[in-house]
Length: 461
Ligand code: FUB
Picture 1 (cartoon, rainbow, N blue to C red):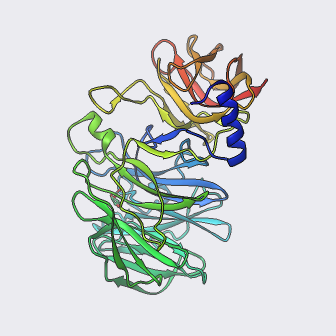
Picture 2: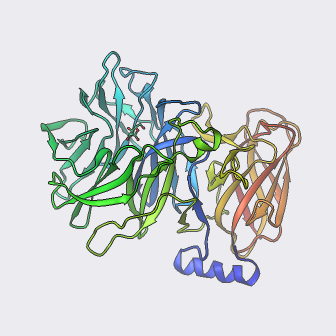
Picture 3: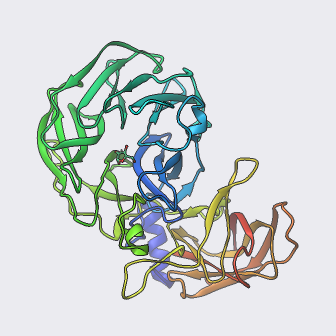
């Protein structure tokens, strides 16, 4: 990243364009603190809310109990927003598995989550709906029963609202069905309709409209699954296959697209299994959400994209360190390390969790673990760093580095205080932080569980 006068020029360029010059990249997978799957991004009020499925750490086959939420305004730093819904949201559903691929849509000031679940005692899946007042939930069951009753192939709901206000819910494996939702978004009118599925369609439909075109992206071919798509000039099809977006990869089995436009850029989300294979040669359903930027062709078709690479997408806005930043805002964390022989390995790291008050914070911080925050704009210079911490054990420190985990050190915060649960702010002076840099918060101390970390903030010179 930039230094000295270059940093000044870089900062000016950011102010003028809002773009990070030579900026930070999101590394794939974009979430390292948990296994995540089935990405369902929602752009709302200038923020990308990324709803995901959640593979349990020791899952072998599918073992999914809740849904997770992350948010970003720059596509590189993702803030863990906790679990907006879980199987407990639907007490009538089977409680020990099957929180599969969700999608959330906003309408009339409310947020509607559609998700596949299983009904106790029925081998077929169903689709549930829940409502919330805010994107981060909590979502509430509205019907006390499924929206789409248990039936063959009722998984992977995808929802969009047409220009005339009509909402459509599509879903299905191995076939593709839809219904017209009523304005309340929690009931439907008319028949459940099966459409002629596009070539190679498997599951995981992602339905949306862009300009005059309707799109149906989906997990294609099997197995492994790639990503394919079809287009139509009507919300109900017919769907014309347009080709693969991404070819399958032998290192993967599943896939699941989520596509958005955000701040003038177009993005494809999916998932891969690299973190699983970093730990074991055995295939488990332990997946990790991935991200790639692309440009539509002038005729609205989508180019064929290569498999997910380590380098995901460029950062599109800098992060302001002079407001409180949630500690669980992470571009990369050392829970997953890299070395020469293997792309990934488990490393000392950090974990995110929700406290009794529902607030997410960073916990189980290990010695020599770190959090990377991409593209932080220090402007003309920072004078001090403050961290809100609790449960401080021993005398841990946070060292602050620019650009690399062992890059220039701009300050050290030596934490004091006891291991009580109340959050307290501790501060240290910093020097040498100006312009735009990746920031590394590196943690030191004896063992693991050094302290809990809620948020941090710099102050200007
Ligand atoms: O995550 C469980 C299932 O795997 C999803 O519902 C499918 O789309 C596939 O990704």
